[in-house]
Image (cartoon, rainbow, N blue to C red; front, side):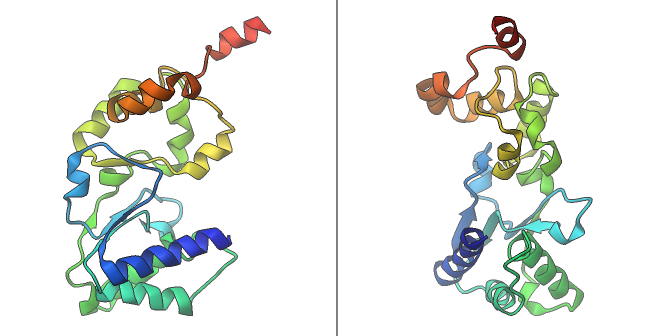
Length: 203
């Protein structure tokens, strides 16, 4: 987990020194509002694990904000290099909750974006977006109406062992609408060449 912890530390250090907005690479912006919103932190769907209520996939702070310094202090003092997420989402969650519980002025001006703004699809449902006709157009229309971005949680994609995108999936719809150039240029390499049933028949 060395690379993951280096990434967690680096994003905090850079935002502390320079300020700005950090966004994970597996987040796709679906609205221009995503880049103009004022939320400092983002919630995520974690009903089974409350210590992951907030995440560090989206951070938006001015330079030298005291809350970011508090995060860096906790990163060092509470470092756990063996448990996934302890220095990332769990760090953000415990520092923010502790700050609010103590009514610490460090977090008095913080704004938190709702989970449906950045993570409209729960972590556990991410593999389903690669399936055909899973809520399809209905889900995408909902994402367009209420969300600013969609977090794809790339580690969930790895668990599916999927090497191509099925046509008719939610992922294809979002790629078509938000990344048309990528779809046009790399479509043949990205999309499955045949339907699963057809592939089975051809074997």
